[in-house]
Amino acid sequence: MFVLGIDSSTQSTKALLVDTDTGAVVDERRAPHPDGSEVDPRHWLEALDATAADLLPRAEAVAVGGQQHGMVALDERGDVVRDALLWNDTRSAPQAEQLTAELGGPAAAARRIGSVPVASFTATKLRWMAEHEPDNAARTHSVLLPHDYVTRALSADEALFATDRGDASGTGYFDPQADAWAPELAASAIGHPIELPTLASAPNAVVGRTRGGAAIAAGTGDNMAAALGLGLGPGEVSLSIGTSGVAAMVSPVPTADPTGLVTGFADASGHFLPLACTINAARILDTTRLLLGVDHAGLDALALASVAGAHGLTMLPYLDGERTPSRPYATGTLAGLTSRTSREDLARAAVEALLCSLADAVAFLEAATGVTAQRIVLIGGGARSEAVRLIAPAVLGRPVEVPPPAEYVALGAARQAAWALSGDREPPAWRPAGTRIHEADPTPEVLDRYRELRGPVS
Image (tube, rainbow, N blue to C red; front, top):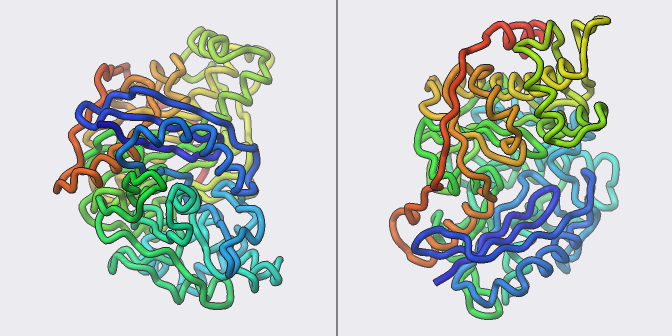
């Protein structure tokens, strides 16, 4: 018996057909998405058709893990009002400040919605649209998240309007204490009441059926799906290096961080998933290798040919603004550049900058939850870098687990689909095989110099 897990990410759609008994991937497809932070969501449906059309008839159940926060505004007929504003669109930074003030300040906002609003959140994009595109705002009858929009397209019922608490918790109008929408906050953001998707009644709920009769699970946000795909337990942290950099920790209780460094999301298993997310992650490596004129392997070789600390060169990698810490207008910085700085040093500084940013994210999580990370698992496209894998334990100051490369968001969606299919109390016990543990002597001086350049975070 097979289930289908779909990852509708910023860059592409990945679809995995997975054996329900073992969690083994038996078939897969991939299709790209348009680049940018503002995208017509119908492109996602084209990618869905390209990846899932052949696999869906073989599946007994399906679920979608999707990029968080994106605003898909629909009119009364269910048609798209405007291009979706994605999580990495930072134009609504002023509106994030407005909404924080309206909630009573950072501490009150964290208590109310689990997080201090930042430009990524859906609510800030609604407010931006209300202020800059009032006609579009007035036409908006309902709002879906990206994974909800894709899930609806899978359904035999074109009116399917459902989501899960995990992805809902990243909108800015979800109450984690009540485990329910706060519709008055959505109405306040856009200026009038809007229809919100029905929240799934349980993490393993079946919310609909495909045209072929397969069960449709609620789906979830990409970070929640990755945690489910990795089988993370309380106190365990995943570090994902993709378009964004994400440190996420499973917690049995909600988190309310008044500093805004940690967002207090819910997860896809009934627990919570406080996380710290950076806008700049794999692009740090991509930008540097393009500057140096090398491929990924070439960047790794250069970085590993330098020394810890890159002979004094330190990079602050806020290339396109940053979310954690919240610096939407920042740019990148190089400090310690001398006539002796080499290509190897620049490559090393880039890898260390990425890992220092993630080390900050782990520290923010530990401070917000009061829990020391019990286990750190490194995933995402950036984890394929040999330099990242070998340098990570030195910068993080602790062992790092690297499971085999896999599409863990899509695997998490498949695991949710299998859970919905079984109706069991717990999801199936899939664990990635072939995980490797990397260790190295800590290099605290690298992180210290990075933090000195970064400056205070709150």
